[in-house]
Structure formats: structure tokens, C-alpha cells
Length: 455
Image (cartoon, rainbow, N blue to C red; front, side):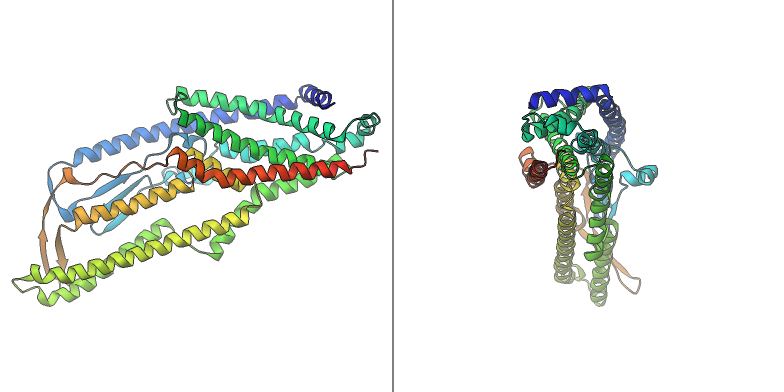
């Protein structure tokens, strides 16, 4: 009987053109948006490569240590065209100088129109468009059959209720996920042709498969929710109204509200503001050091007398900066945990966290980049900027001893990426939440329909 219900629903989807519209929603925006995003990513990669090449060519000859400018370049992951994640809030370049650091532009600053209207990627389409299609497919699964009278006719014969429900669910699953799987395959082939990924690589295949699994589980939660609401109401109009309110709350209101509430509860400085505060702290330590050193500036043994005082301030500054970094990192992690906890009711949260992590633009990759940047800055300070000194005293006098640096010895910012095993481990909690949500919704729909009045 499950097979008969399944075939009936599939035929109805073909006749009513539901399957056609699902195919259009899957085969047009997903590959098209990926191609557009991939072209923008290729343009950025070309610009990035030129900037890196120009920088490498400039690292020739000798230069005073305090005049050296060191740059760190961040490369974008090849699958970021599928999920932008945190890519737009991370800097593309960071310049390190003796007097501090400056952050280059992110994606939103390079193209302000993107910040104004937003960008479309696979995550956006699945989150908004296909989830809405899922509830349209299932809002009348039970109540529409009751309103037309076919439900009582079906159960006038000995038809098991679980067979009816499984047939409905499996048909909706195939109608939605069949075209989506085909569009994902087409997208993977387009990425292969664009040279973004290699399908011969097991890592790329597992990443794409993981993204497909997360998107599928997310869409299945809305299929289960649609059947649950349909089995809890007696009219299709009531069902679709309730589902639209639930969809708006779960997909739009709750995730946004959770982030805003977390920002209010635990405010965190922006990256630019935090960097400015660190630079101001460094300048304050330099002024205090200069004030203590000024009485010694006329002494012939100034360099020897300066060393213990400069070391004292260097240790204090290093400790103060480390405390600032630790406090800022702690507040960031706490804010993120609070926001995630508040938004955990919505399936959008595990979807976004899982897909962005697999695409290389998630929270773990962001934390890894910022950690590597902090270590790189400490290395540059030790190997470059600590060579020699240039003290400017409050009275306007100056004393300096500058060593020349061979620019070929300037440290390079290392490539930063999570291994596949680390990436997979980072998505386990999100995957578990989606699986549990699917199971809970389907069980609730089953027991609700078991007591449903068919006549």
C-alpha cells in the first residue's frame, strides 16, 4: 500500500506541475549563482596572486627594521562560492608595521552593493527558497485529503496508517531531493570545469557530499514539519497559514533575533576597533618607556642602560596584549555560544554552521586564521621590529639605533587550512541536531496522524 500511495503522489506532482517547479527552483538558481560566485572568486584569486607577486618582488635588498612593512594574505577556499559564511567579515590582507597593524578590505567593503542587497549562494537558496518549497509540498498531505473526502475513502479499506504516511513522506522526499541532488551534481561538474575543485580528490568529494547531506537533512525537517502540521489541522488554509508563520519564525526571525540578543548581552569589539585599541595600548607603552628613558638619553652608554628598561616594557606590553587577546577571544566565544544556544531551536543554525564549515568559511576556519595571524604578528615583532630601536622623547629629542634587515629574511604568512578530519569533527554536533530534529518531527507526525479523524 505504501507503494500505491507513493506512485499516486508522484503522479499528482507531475500532473500538477509541482515537480516541474521544483526542478526550475533547483536547476536555475543553484548552478547559476555558483557560476557567478565562482567567477568573482576567480577574479579575486587573480588580483590576490598579483598583489602577492608584487609584494614578493618588493622584498629585495636591505631596509631599516622600523621601516619594513610586512603583509599577510588570506586565501579563499575553493568551495566558498557555495557558502560565503564568515568570508566577508575576515580581512583579505593585513599589514604589519612597527607602530601597529592595519586591516585590508573584506568582501563587503570591496563591493558595497553586496552589503546593500546581499549575495546569493547555495546556502541562501536552500535556507529560504527550497525550505519554502518543502512546506508547499506537504501542507496538504493529510488535511487536503480530508477536505476533499478522499481520506475517508482510502481508509474505508484496510489501509495501515503508517503505509499512508510513509507513502506521502517518501514521495515528497523524492520530489524535492531528486531535483536537488541532480542540481548538486551539475554544480559539482561546473566547479570541476571551472577548476575550482577536482572530483578525483576524495577530500573535495567528501566536502560536497557533506554539504548535500546537511542541506537534505535541513529540507527533510521542513517536510516533517509540513506533515506534522497537516496532520494536526483539518483545512489546508489553516495548515499553510500556520506553516508560513512557523517558517518565518524559524528561518528569519529566530536566527536574527538570537544574534542581536547575544550582541546586547555580551558586546564584543569589532576587529577594526580591537586592533585600534591594541595599537593605542602599544603607543601608550612607548610613551611611558620614552619618559623613563629620557633622563638617560645623554649618557654615552645609553644603549646598555636602555636594554633592561626596554625589556621590562616589552614584557609588560606582551603580557597586556596577551590579556587583551585572551579576553577578546573569550568574549567572542561566549557570544557565539550564547547566540548558538538561543538559535538552536531553528534548523537554520546547524545548517549554516555545518555547510559553512565544510565550505571552508565557517567558525573553525575563522578562529584558525585569527590564531595564525596572532602567532605571525608575534614572529614578525621578534624577528624584524625588535631589531634596533628608535626612541622619541617627550621633549622632542630622539635616540635611535636601527639595524638593517635583509628583506629576504622577512617571515611569510603560512597557508592556513583545517584538515578534513578536523572539519568533519567540527560538524558532528550540527549533524546530530539535524538528525534528532528529523526523527522528532516524523515521530510526532506519526503519532498525531495515528489519532487523526479521517471522517
